[in-house]
Image (tube, rainbow, N blue to C red; front, side, top):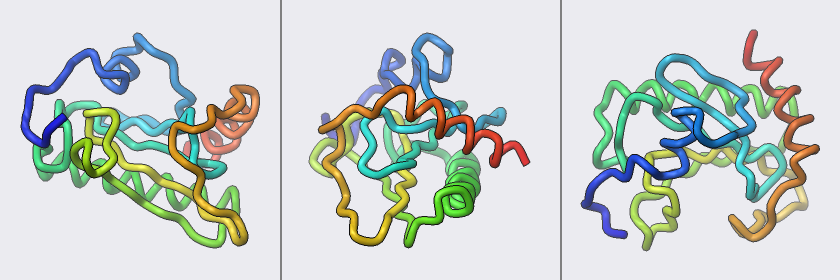
Length: 145
């Protein structure tokens, strides 16, 4: 898929926002939603998406919604660092298939990085839902404060 095109209202993130598909939600307000990645590259890998912007990528989102997403990314990153104590945290955002984008609704990855652990291949291994649920409870509690 190219950088320019029509927004698909049936993409998985749009379905999650509408409540038509489940997710392991860790944070939500009226503008953004954050949830755990089902195919994490690292323990705690989270995604942050805009709820009110039908934007496929960073080229299409308005600056107000982008600022709200970015503020939520910082909030999620802080919660991940406080809760999981990683050595680092990686924030990534891809635009277009050649750049690695697979879901065409703007989203940002917040990925804890731990000493001695490489970054897994995205979508290679699905996380254990029981482990995601446990982590969801921990992070949700921290993000409510």
